[in-house]
Length: 108
Image (cartoon, rainbow, N blue to C red):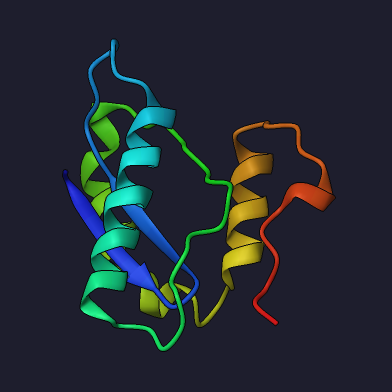
């Protein structure tokens, strides 16, 4: 774990991984264990659950400090750009094809 920061509607987790590790297994474990902990602590009035999807992006070692600063500055950053705008910008920047219907939806 290199850096994390939580916002009301999403979390950034910056980690170092080995080539043999699976991102999907890691995310499944993070979601399962954190949901269990949040529900055991009764932090929410109703049962907490993560949404189904996630986004994962890779960076080189030379970008570590920039990514850490970006994650630490989330509160200021999201005054200019909300999560949905940020996420779709990442998808476009990283040239990831996507269908609008599968993108994160703002809470109702």
